[in-house]
Length: 245
Image (cartoon, rainbow, N blue to C red):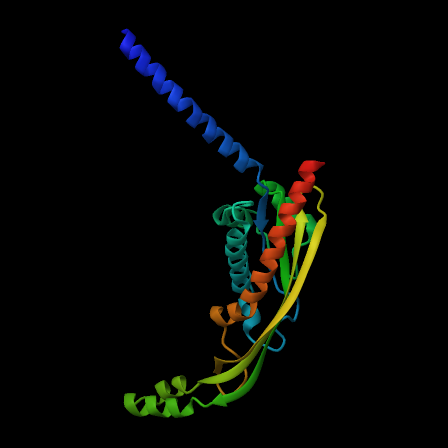
């Protein structure tokens, strides 16, 4: 190698070394950020006592809450936390068949947190979800019209078996932040919300409100937004205190 080539190689190496050091520092800084896993939010027994049929969708409600918390916490953390990837959590849940009837206890949360490499876990439960039918606009006229147009009495009956009514939704959510290493519940959160009258589909002439993800979100999204802010603040503070110790 001639002198000019040698100088070019030395110059290139001098340029690359700071970049490698910077990348290494960034990777190390990221690794130090506390990792948080967001677990299931199952429903307590009789949580849907006034909202018949919704209990059959408890799994969907739990998934929706987990997604809402993941999005809200990710946005509010501003890079101060690392969240366990959804696919990784999903795979582990399937492997362990991680399901609880009423709540995820600290011992189970601690076990899952360790397997996920998480320092903290967030879990909780839906303690209430209520539906109160206020008024109705009948669907039987629609059914009669469908039957006349199609010439099918069955089609008319099916169309007329669903009414759009005004329904008041309310719900309560309890959440807990758990430190994985000790299994200690660091803090608990609870809040409730009510939507006021909103349009919903009700089967037949009764009061059984059909399940709808958007209606569930109307109740829980405001609660998640408020809780997510507190979760981020407490998690970051707990991590800083651990580092000081």
